[in-house]
Image (cartoon, rainbow, N blue to C red; front, side):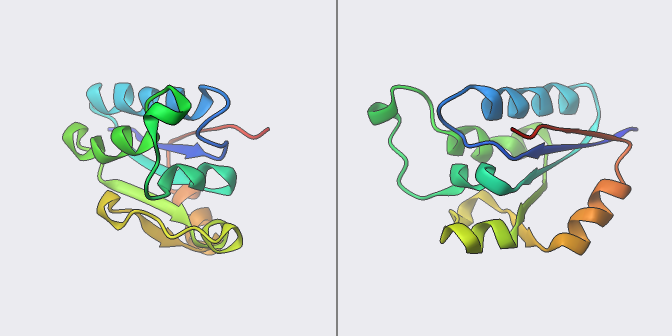
Length: 119
């Protein structure tokens, strides 16, 4: 079984990129991939409490993120430094583990396929 790592580093709103990455992760999991997700840089904004889908007229990422265990995606990580630098307290019900750079590099090294995108 291939180990996939999806790195979400773009903000959750303003484009569909972050949502599309999460959808691709769901597809990989449905095809029996071992999927992990890492949110870092501006991707961590999707972990904020009290997002309003009505105000932005699109679904919030927290809905997708909260459904990941249904697709057997249970390896969920967030860059601790990205959270700290943005002053974000993530929604703890989403089950993400905050990790540092060394752990991120180990996660990347242990993955067969890394899918990410920068600006």
